[in-house]
Length: 154
Image (cartoon, rainbow, N blue to C red):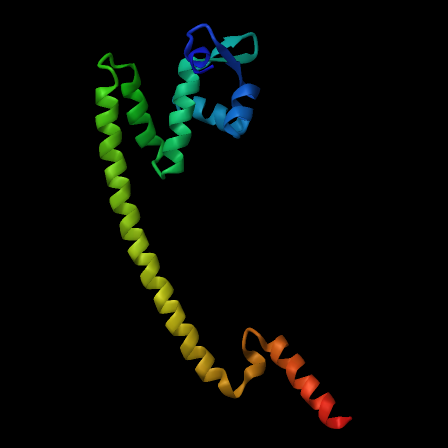
């Protein structure tokens, strides 16, 4: 089956690619407008070949790891270079390493922000200790208090 997907005579409709890659026709047209895909036309219908399918796969993988469409375009531009994919692999490797560094920085920032928010929550909860009705679980507190009061009255 994999060999079938790579045969040059194999073609795909927009619907087939959308179903396979779980994307919308609008997304495919957008990538076409950006010059990332260039399907053939049969009348008003777009006809995608095995190269278009491979490019779409790379576009979606690039987006999934956070590359911009411009970066994806740079990588795709090397798709046609006749060097066995070496330049494309080298460019991809550089972009992936840059993305890893950026994500690691973001992760550190996110961890620090979470810690600051937790400290802020603790400080506000301590400040509101005299007003438990204003705490996030005020409804739970209110129910417990009502049960205690109802039990004392009966």
